[in-house]
Image (cartoon, rainbow, N blue to C red):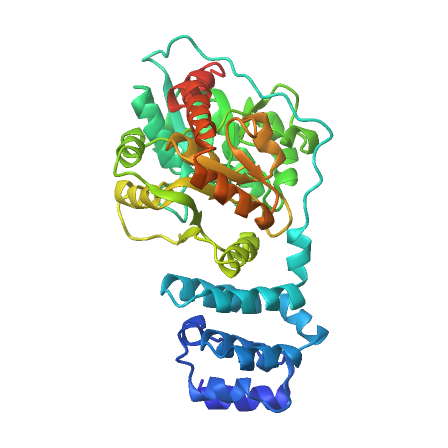
Length: 450
């Protein structure tokens, strides 16, 4: 559609009669079309045109105009945040400006002020999370004394958005342990799979939208597997409790990196494996960790998506206060690279600083246990992590890692990192990982379930 046409139609049929597709790059680079500028300068100044005017002015470096735009906005802008489209635009502009080096302290301050005034989730996701009544006891795990070379493992796993997904990590870890392991598509016929000691299933890759076919397939797998386990990478996903209730009796155990799961989910006692998923790609970790000395200070490496957009607030806060936080944004989209090269680049970005910030909250307010926790420790870097209850079952705050509640805690952490005061914590965290959660330890514990 001609840009001038959609501007005209929006004015005639507004306020929210059409879904307007507005690209973030032109706004973030200050190269907006005349049509978009005309739309933003609408004299009627409805919420969307006012918000676009603010973004255009901010990224153009025109602070007076941006603040003027904010003064003319009021509570009527809140409905824009009810869906994801406008927030995607806001975060997309931020991401593009950050990646192209166009986001300075003044712009971050304006964006933070805008979020604080108008985004309903800013206050909701910025509040401090109530702590558990007592610090839980750190879990201990049984480990097989040795691994049998006759173990036969099958992983039923589908492709993920990222090429270095959990399936490849598992395969790599089993290979390092010299245990036979095959990775097959989730809907592979049980006759082709054959008899195995352990079949691990990612249920989301098996007839995902056809529950009856899925359960029938699981019944057939039971006949070829001495032990059948379900991998649960995302126990916070929509509909998870329903899936558990439907298939709980078919599995010998569930493998989930979420110790608090047993408090809320219908998993029978004694059927949940809680040891962290293995890292895999050990030589790559060793190569990157042993490379040139990392930058001093704290870094953030990760993606900002719909499901974790509160990271946007954290990063804005750091940028607005002039922090030297090193920010490296990643993407959940396939990058077209081979598995090893893609993973290498991720690790180089993650482990590029002496300390790594791990953010755990989702946009729902849930605080989850993330794999990056153990990536950082495996890479022998200092872990600085947002509070999440599940982490306390694995690691001791202040001994293995530094725990923070919000962005306001980070200035002190930066100072302690610069002074070297947290070096003992970094060493202790790396040692705890090697002792309890290395790939060898994880596979040896998993062997006890066979």
